[in-house]
Structures are given as C-alpha cells and as structure tokens.
View 1 (cartoon, rainbow, N blue to C red):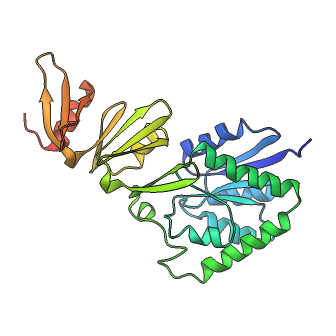
View 2: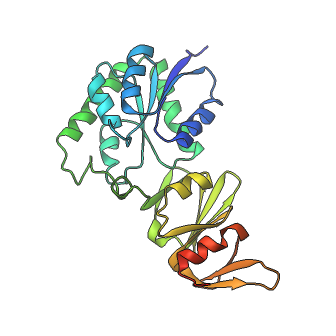
View 3: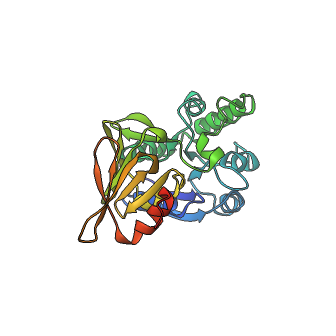
Length: 270
C-alpha cells in the first residue's frame, strides 16, 4: 500500500483551489489537510500541519509563493508543485532546476503528470533531492535579471490575461489574447477561436471571463465571450432576438439580458 500523501493547497483564487480539490479527489491515498488563500496563511499552515506536498500559487497578493518558500526556508519547505501563470520564457527557471510546476490554465493530463512525479519521489524517499532542486531554483531567481526567470507575465502586471497557454498531449500552445476573436463554452471546456484556428481548453467560462480585460471582451451569452473590436454589426430580429456579426461573417446570439450593456460598450445610442 502506498503512503497517504498529506496535501496543502495554497491559492488566492476560489475556482483554482476548487479545481485542485476536485482533481485530488480522484487520486487514491491522498488527504487534503489544509487550504490557504494567501502567503501568510500558507506559512502558518505549513509550520502547523507539516504536509507532505504543497500546491503553491506563485502570484498572490502580499507574499508571493516564492516569498513563502524563502520564509519557510528550502530545507524545511515540503516538496512543492508551483502553480503559475508565468510565460514560457520565465518557465525556463523551473525547468532548469527540475522544480515541478503547473502552468495556468492546465488540463487534467498535465496535473496527473506532475502529481504522479511527486508521488513517485515521495514513495522513493527522494525528498532530499527535491529540497536540493528547490534551493537551486531559489538561488537562480535571486541572481536572475528582472526580464528573465523571475519576471512576471503581462498577466501579473495588468491584472488580465495577455496569453493563454493551451496544453494538449504534452505540448503547450501559447495563444495571444490579442488574436482571439471569440470564445465558446461547452460543459467544462471552452474553445478559443483565433483567426482560423480553434483551441480546446478545460476551463470554466466564469473563471476565464474574470481574467479577461472587460474593456476588450464582453460575455454576450452564457456560453459566448466576444472581443468587442471584432463586432461588425449588431442584429435585431423582428421577434426580439439579438445577434452580432463579427468581421469574417460569424454570427453569434446575444442573450436578451445582455443587450443593453453590449450597446453601451459599443457606444450605440438609443
């Protein structure tokens, strides 16, 4: 029988925390011993609970995930999987130090890969090696130029997504938000429509809407988000239904309760 892995989840986003909880619920021999919503709470929980594994968000208000590790100290820090929205260039720091991470938004396959690697290392008693990797990672951050390993993405600076990494079969495609025309939802998945390309992403529509710049994107329907500057025509039917036609000819329905706000965003006068 494998050892029970005692897990602490640290993330300031409720939906992100719940996603990890849901994914871990399918893993055998796992006990979620605590949840923290900020860096100070994480430090307190790590010291009190001594978890076997920590899922640690990097970008949080106040103390960041890196601040948490520095304050605990790499020698006392439990094995850690960082959860991050850093871009591909910044991720080299994680890869060079062999420290595991999940790039937001991540799919089930990538989560499983990271978790099983951590499980294997814990079962093989490789905690010392993981500590060495973590120390090496922090040393690299301390000596890195601001524009390289430790630089936040435009997401962290502006507060809104500028790139959306889409992972499929072990490969990551980074989709610039500026290339997205519209987004549609189907159950737990969304499809990014960017030019002639589509990208399937396991993400909740509400979570994605919250992370997109509202001056550039608007949710015209419970299952559709549109980039405002792609709207060419607002259509009104005799039956009272509404739709928008985008550049390129795509027509999308507009929920009746969202029409007035859409007209306001488009500068349409009554």
